[in-house]
Length: 365
Image (cartoon, rainbow, N blue to C red; front, top):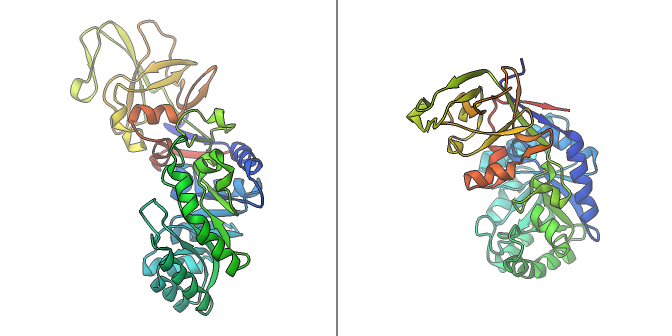
């Protein structure tokens, strides 16, 4: 019998998506691939290796520990740590030979005290999280980095707040605010890279490509616009399956699961799958999602529990114990996308895949 919950991950799909993104780039732009949060739930080292093999120029993560894990897995080349770092994490990032992001002179001093590194200075043009909103302060950080022993000004960066909203004008406003600062940094520090674009911006507007893009979700074949990845020429990397562990009849009026949130209005058959919120299949999908069994859609019936979900497979069924059940992916002519699941949850596809927990066995091919 198959494992209770299994994620099949396709390295060829990563390669396809990387190639698709590289072909979209304009001018001298290079492709950075974001593998933070365990490669958006897919597996960071494996995704990074597949992306590198397909021509990715950079890797990007959020933490020093993530950079260290990539190095331990044998990944070479440029790695950018994009997140805020505690004093202890700075040393971990530097030991991993990673580039880091700075927006205060105090952080630059900390980097210098630990032996130096390549730094990318972040101007906050509207995201409102990390970076300084003050261009003059950002220039001061650049000057401090240039003056510090062992520190190299490697880039200027910002991050878009609304790139995934195609008609929103704020991305263009952010880009206009960033360009003067980026041009100053590049003029004063030849070789420094200007970068701003995430997956959505990369696909939406070539003007955002600059010297480097930081593509994340699209690399995994997920649509940054929350529609259908195939519309963007992307292939999903992840296929999530479980197995039918039990099949039993249920009479009209009988209930299934905690809280009796499904009460049968007719005689039907219930299949139980050994996957639940302990695997990252969210409880909010109770009575609110489908699975594929034998190429047909069947609705979840009853409360998603920690270890199981139950599925209404109809009063007359050929579903048997041992059948494959697909929660994300294709089976026959039918498919369920991460975007569909995100829509059922009122969230985004990023959260669907990063929320898959370690109990799901991941297997790359």
